[in-house]
Length: 86
Image (cartoon, rainbow, N blue to C red; front, top):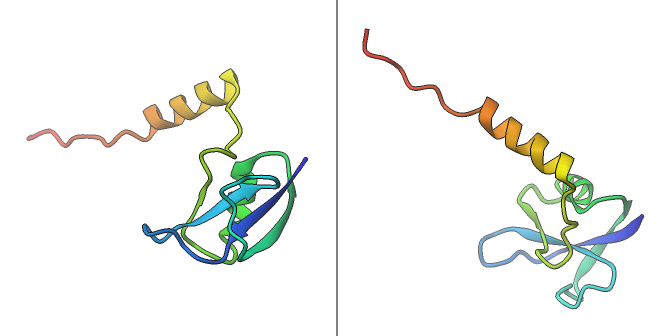
């Protein structure tokens, strides 16, 4: 498990970044989120305080092959359906 923090100040795009402990991009004005197994879970926790959040690209955990396949399957399942002219 890793300690995660969220920046109290947002980025120019409005998102508050979530960082793992030791990240060099972490702001000094931050709050502790807790210990989590993945950055994605920490982002969900950060959304309790700041709706618009994003994980730091340097802190984001690489996805396993099974997680990548699962996300790809979800993308296929939720593709917009085009209406046919009948």
